[in-house]
Image (tube, rainbow, N blue to C red; front, side):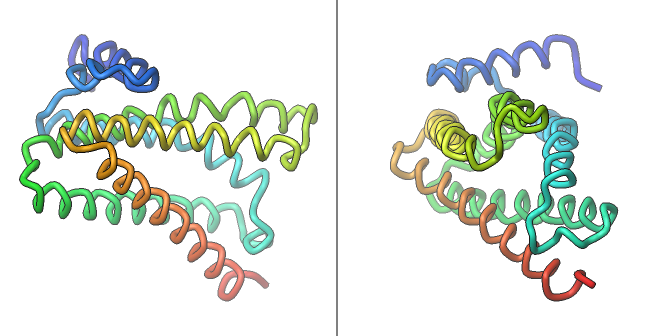
Length: 194
């Protein structure tokens, strides 16, 4: 599946980027084969997010069957990935940074690990009844803000672009994520609820 050393190298890159260390960009490969393999990582961490969606569905989709909810989530994640990477491809093509695009894809996919691991303690506290979601929401927002920060830092380092443009790329990620979630809720509310 993964060649020897690739997992260790990319995990180290994740840690360095999450700690805002520039040398983290050198850990991620830049080949098409590694970019394709890197899509395995978000697929492996998605069951945790899917579990949260199933246990705590938004009111708009709370009456939708679990299978339909899982399908909607998978389609949403595919749409987010395609729209976001399409936008990033357009930007890197316009600023002549195409040679770093595959490295960006690899880093983005591997950074789903620290982003997911940061949220796990909050989810565990909610699942075990220690806190309600309303009590942990501000903390979760801070964690999400930090994950967007290190995503912008990664984009700046990997694509060799100014931090302002990297922040814009991260904003595109946020906008695509938010709007596809809104569309999913709207579809659940208007077409799938009984």
